[in-house]
Length: 376
Figure 1: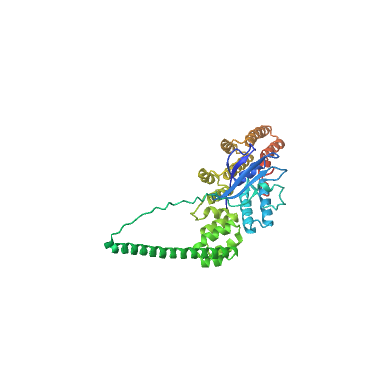
Figure 2: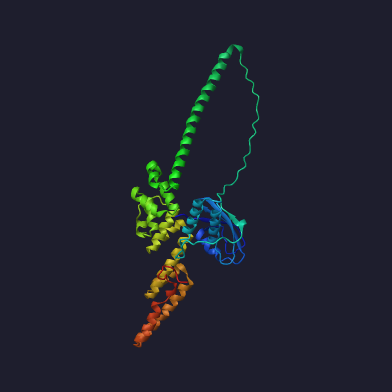
């Protein structure tokens, strides 16, 4: 799972107070921009710049929709390869897969609003000036005695010998470089054509590269077939995460845990309700996405505790979150319990049921609904 970072280069929106954001956070904040507020931004992945653009808030158009429509437009006009554009679209969609407990799905976009000046899609490589160094020729005069010509012959022979070995080394080095280019072109061609098994048959040392390609291109059906033929820990981890088999994700023997995979592992722990484990991972990661998922999951856990009349657990969670909604619910739950106790003493069964029903439904509108999304 690729994590895309955003650098804000220029903006007139006070909501965007930081310089660096993760793409999901940037998307959420940009939705709150007011009409005609703008932001100039740079998208990066693995320290590599992949997209630069300017977004002006017009109507209800979001940053994600704006970027996607521009990429579609450039693909339609053959300004970029369709595979390159689709790959970037997939990466952006996957970055927004989980935000605030909501599952986002890929959207099809209409042609972009008129603003060609903001549209830039390129690998951004800082230009470096190629200054030619002027070498001053120095006239060096060598004087050799007439009767010591043999020394001159020896020196010339030495130079010729050195030149010979340099030439041999250059020849073999160039041959190796040419061979490497041929291998890379052949390997890339096999991947482009979808011949992943054949690629691994020919280049078994590139197994991890093939798995990385399949995950980055969102080709999980092909990854599943590849795993049957060439099983790897990293392939099993990525496939389990895609299929939402959270137990398999956390039980994976994979030791090559990049920052992206640590975030994926933390997310799997949250999905399993193991919030403490996710917190331990995020102490080092400091992921804003995981922070939000943890806060949301703890809030859900506290509301469920309130509905079960376990106010001590809810209060412990509230000490951590300091959530205004949760504070009000706890106060209301205490009132419900007092009323229930009162009607118990009065032996008023009907009113006991009324207040017990209120308690059991407290915060219901803040819990995930049947589709797994938070009610709005």
